[in-house]
View 1 (cartoon, helix red, strand yellow):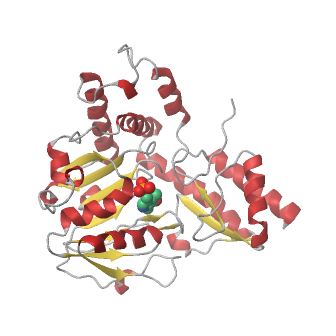
View 2 (cartoon, helix red, strand yellow; view 1 turned 90 degrees about the vertical axis):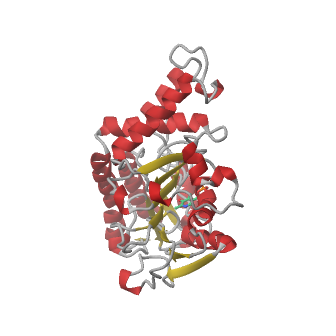
View 3 (spheres, protein in one colour; view 1 turned 135 degrees about the vertical axis):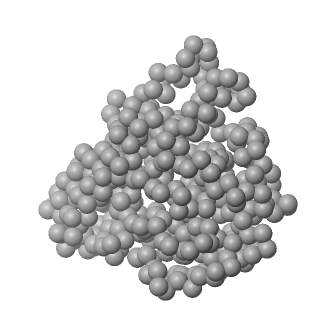
Length: 357
Ligand SMILES: *Cc1c(COP(=O)(O)O)cnc(C)c1O
C-alpha cells in the first residue's frame, strides 16, 4: 500500500490513525457485530458515538455552555440558506465578501430576504480593511468567510462587529487552530475539508439565537427543531458523524488545537517562504492575509500549469490544480497533511524550476 500526499481541497486527506481505526472497527464496532454504517441512530451504540463526538468537540474548542452544537446535513451550501432562514426574522444580513464562497452566501441570502454587501474588494487577494466596512447596526447578523478556500485568503483575527451577532463559514479552517467561540453568534462548517468525511455539517450556535426560524423553512434547516431533537430530527449522516468524531479525538491526542495551529503555521510558511524566494512562482495574496490551509500560486509561464500538476501527481502529490474559477495551482494543507508533505512539495517545486523554469 502507498499513501500519497493528497493536496485536494475537499474532500481531502484524513489522518492515517483515524483511517486505521475505521478499518479496524469496520465490520464489528466494539462487539456489536455490525458496522457503524448499519446501526440504528436511535440505539445505544450510536448514541454513545454521537454524544462522545459532541463532548470531544466541545472540549477541543472550549465551546461555552450557552452554545448548542448541531450535526446537520446539506453542507455549507445548505447553511448559506439556513442562516438567513433562521436569523433574518424580518431584518437584513450584512455580508463581508472576500472570495467566491462569500459571493455564494450573499446570493442564497437574497432569495429569502435582504443581503447587504458591507465590504467587497475589487480583487479577492486580501481581507478588506475593517474601516471600509459599511455595517448596519440593525442587521440581524454579520456574515464572513474566515478562510476563502479558492483564493487562499484568511482572516488571522476575529473582526469586531459590536453587538450584532457574527456568523462565520468556517468550512475550510474549522479546527485548524484555537478559536474563541464566544465571539460568534453562529459558526458553521462542512466536515470534508478539515474535520472528517463529507456528509456532516457542524453548526455551533449561541442559544439566544434559536427560535426565530422562518415558518416556511424546511424543518431539517430549523436550528431550534434540530437542537430540540439532538440533531436527530431525521436520520443523521451517521458514518460521517462517527469518523469526524475520531478526527476530533486525533486532534486531542496530537495535543489539541494550539499544537495543531502552530504546526499549520509552520507548514504554510515552508511553502510561502519558498514561493517568495523564487521568482518563477508567485502568490498573489497580501502577506498578512495568506491562508494557512490553502496555498495558491501561479507559474511565471502558465502554459506549464498542466505539466506541473501532472508531474506532481506522478510523484505522489495529487490535487494541486487551482480551482477552475481562478486557475493556477493550489495546495490544500489541512490538519492531516504532514509537514513532510509540504517539504516534498517544495522539493518538487525546486526540481520543476531547475528542469522546466
Ligand atoms: C467547500 C466550501 C463550501 C461548500 O461546502 P459544501 O459542503 O460543498 O456545501 C462553502 N464555504 C467554504 C469556505 C468552503 O470551503
